[in-house]
Length: 128
Image 1 (cartoon, rainbow, N blue to C red):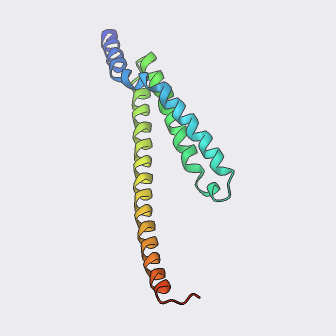
Image 2 (spheres, helix red, strand yellow; image 1 turned 120 degrees about the vertical axis):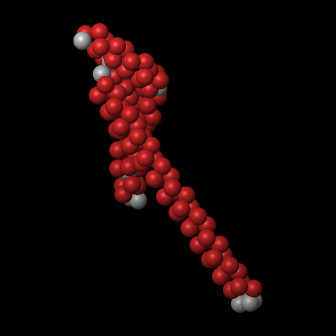
Image 3 (cartoon, rainbow, N blue to C red; image 1 turned 90 degrees about the vertical axis):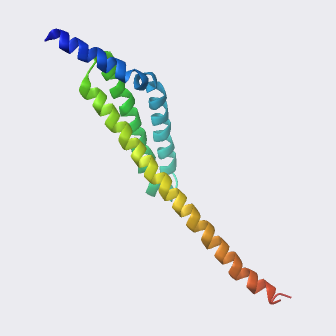
C-alpha cells in the first residue's frame, strides 16, 4: 500500500512539474494584476471594473501556490485545485476578451455611422 502511495506521489510530481516550473511567473502576473486592479480603483470609472483584475490576480496567485504544494508534497488535491484555478482564470480571461472584442466592433460601427451622418451635414455647406 505504501508503494502505491509513493508511486502516486511521484506521478503527481511528474505531472505537476510544468505548472510548478511556471509558478513564479503565475505569482508575478497575479501580483501585477492585483496592483493593476488597485490602480484602476483609484479612478472614478475604474472603481466599477477594478474587482475583475484583482480577482483574477488572486486566482492566478493561488494557482501558483497550489502547484507548489502539489509538487513538493505529491498531493493530488493540491494539483487538482491548481488546475481548477487555472481553468477558472482562463475562462474569465476568455470571456472578458470576447466582450472586449464585441464592444470594440460595436464602437467601430457606431463611429463609422456617426462619421457618415456628420459627413452629410458638412457637405451641405451650412458653415460660413
